[in-house]
Length: 154
Image (cartoon, rainbow, N blue to C red):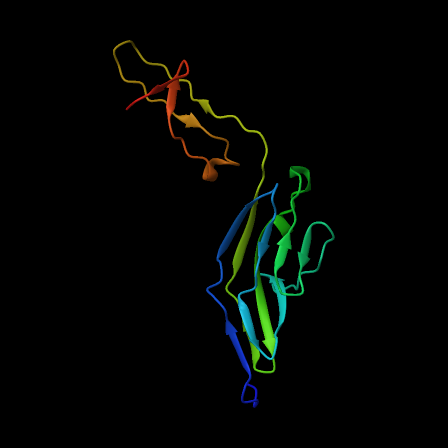
């Protein structure tokens, strides 16, 4: 702790615990800390390794905001695009650490949903299942069923 009477170090707001973003848009993640005198903000991987700028891929702005740039699916890297980060703020008052923030890119690429084939005898019940690729399953919701382009009502 600093002996200075007007020195402080604090969290501005509750930090995010997960950031999910589309690979086509990228994301900005602010470090949720501030203080007087001004703080030095740094970002780390959950392993404790301080991150570095990767031109056109990842950048830490002077205000402490972590930016992940848009990228094509072929450039996906788990280390950058699906990893856990945290930031620290430091000044003469001390040093504080944010909660872990899981940053996950969702690849924007074409996908097809299909109906699982079913067999049943006439007059019996058939249960159909909509098959959604696992890469997008968490982000897709089935909102209706259609037969011959006509919506079915339950």
